[in-house]
Figure: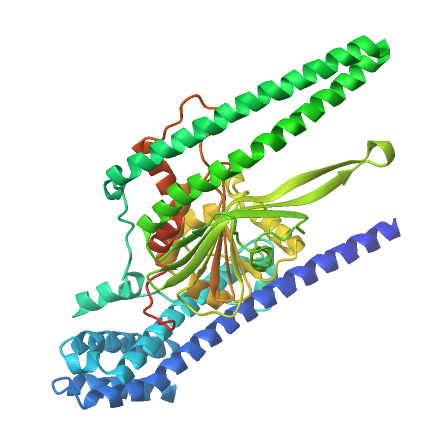
Length: 186
Length: 334
């Protein structure tokens, strides 16, 4: 009889540890996915000064846009403000770069500039990677949220105070083909 | 940038093709006549030998020697007709398939006896069973737009031995049979991402997701399951990757949609691997592609519709490039 009780206790403990560990690993995955978005965003911040430097000589009518982009970048790298402020700033950067890409169409000399084209390609590439990182983040948040809300893992999640995380909502422009989106914004 | 497959029956130069098809049919009929004559000759020899056995050997020899004679007759027949058949087959492939591929894209080359190398097939990591017998033929290679590609028919098998002692049986089991396609992918990546057919999806329910993940853990394939947003895609495929972010970088939302359309069009469980900045696609088929009509058919002069059916097969590479948008090089690989 005693043996049975001991076995049941051991099995229960193993199940508990298993569930606890899976919750922790899901939470770590969310943090890791969030960090990878940061890496991609930082790469974009690094590209912006070069982009501005390469276009400002040619772009005579978009001074305001370039100033706005510089300010947004400064705000983004300062890291001040709440998480939602930061997301907002990053979204505005995406938007400003989109408008810049449209404005470039009016400057044939830029479209023939090898240096600028390379930067533009690098930025497009980074945008793709940011979008991939966001999707990876959303997938891991969904898995994490499902785990902390389902029975019986929710009991453990409540015990250690795990809170649901919020999903990144991709803006409409990102969901459509980038070129079409830019045309619409222009 | 995108290269749409515009080849159709209208592009086939009927006047040029007709005499070639006539000549090929004449060659085939000649091969067929030769086969019939050979069959008669071999049968005659077998019958004469059989009579000799009946006349001069004891009765209990009749059955085994008859069996041996029949087997020898069949081997002799195969050996005697093989050369003429192979010559005809090569000519057919050169004249018909070789011309059709030029029509699809003049930059593509065709080698009837070449094939995807066994090492390339294994490098894809798609089929992890050890290969004991490997055959590949009908290699197409070249460049469409900005995409280097090659594809061929591949048949890979493993040996299975059951029983022991007298009951020991060995047979070959197919790992993959169909068209195997390798191309440059338009994005650079370092990890490994596999898009495999999902056989459990139709059974429904989350419990099968769990079984599927265990199955993956047992398969020894590197990486972890990747859950993607598109439910139709998730129904057809089952994705694993060594890098969650990179998998989504490769499988953009538009790529997911393209893959679903491609899968629906082919209606066969395709498997795709992204390894070493290459895309590998395995398309299982039962049909033996790029082969001439049977030697025994009474009349098999190809009409234009049948030529178009061959063209459809040959055009596959161009279609993959267009369907999966491999030529769009707006990102890192320019």
